[in-house]
Image 1 (cartoon, helix red, strand yellow):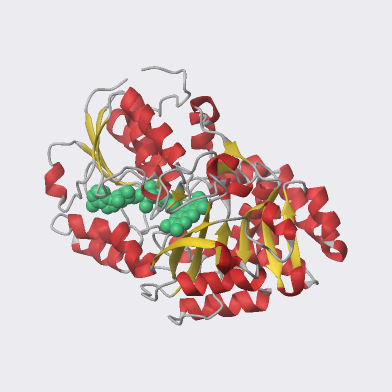
Image 2 (cartoon, helix red, strand yellow):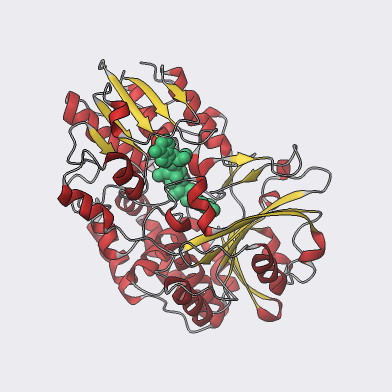
Length: 480
Ligand SMILES: Cc1cc2nc3c(=O)[nH]c(=O)nc-3n(C[C@H](O)[C@H](O)[C@H](O)COP(=O)(O)OP(=O)(O)OC[C@H]3O[C@@H](n4cnc5c(N)ncnc54)[C@H](O)[C@@H]3O)c2cc1C
């Protein structure tokens, strides 16, 4: 146990994970949040009907299910149920066809026909090394792998990329690579497809019962139980405001850090931060609908996540357009009908549908018609079920949360360079040139997603450097 004060700026999953870790170590933690509500990318809200919850940002949590931070924190013991669909993700194609990634590897391979053996060869060995691969990729990316064989096997597969002959398996694989926003066709896209793709057959792609806000509440409750305090509606605009805190952890993106610390940062570091690049943006639509999505292939309705991108060639083309600043009329769209997995989300037959399209960074085209048309293509009649819809353009996302620059929901492109140097080249990526000031957002390793690891690792680094202390236990029954 240590004594002292710490400020955490931002209450996304990483800010909350940092605060949990610091508060459990004994520090008096104050969290500052610009928005009226805590949670960052974990916020859920009733948008149209007070009984129906929509996830404003994240909805599906393969990384929260697998990350060492959340496994130690133990969401289940804190009453957060991660509900795992039997079909992790689906990829509809024209003509009522669809490729399905079941949780079961056997079921997936059986349904893929001639490409089934290749799917097994690709993912089977990774499943055997799942724990060490997850530990490696959800880390500060500075440590040697605990299983060199697993890492080698992963690396060879990532170099090779899509090994499938048939359209369906190739599209299924490439749809997961699409989570690398803008990097779909290269090494990074392949690595993301292998990492998230193998988790679909391991700990699954769950949705939290009741919505993503349940995860934020569990984290915030733990912070409060260990003496932490929240100040919402307070955007920190100058680091000088926090001069009284010997430790400051920033759950802010690179651009926001530069903005609030411009006066204090050395020029060279400030220039490096200003060179940090951003990926294409997300344009989100929340629908309230009167019935399940009428997918042409009904099996798609059993999946937790649906990728709408067409064939591999179509996805590569639309992602390339978005990266080059052009809006495709058939963008890559992700769709989640949480009610398909969690019946508590359905009230009087009405249910939320969560969807977003990959669009050029900063795009301000209202997305409702675009996304509705994209869903209609694979679910004719969807438009007739829509009761309400709200769109957020990529440009508006940055106003909602300064970390999403131009709507880049990854807080910085996941190029090879920016994976290695995130946000700038430093051996300890959470440190900054300012004594006691650490970065802990998705603009640091391991990057985007709800895994809490950037926050946890930044807090661990701060505890070690300032107090010579190892991180505390995160288990629910541990008390300071
Ligand atoms: C539409 C969308 C869909 C997504 N889907 C998924 C998904 O299904 N699964 C998944 O794992 N991930 C998903 N993500 C990504 C995920 O939400 C983020 O990667 C994750 O939330 C990043 O966490 P973070 O703590 O680094 O930052 P954030 O969650 O972005 O939180 C940062 C917080 O800091 C606050 N802040 C910033 N600057 C200041 C300041 N100066 N002063 C005070 N407060 C400040 C912000 O208001 C915000 O609350 C999605 C994101 C979006 C937008």
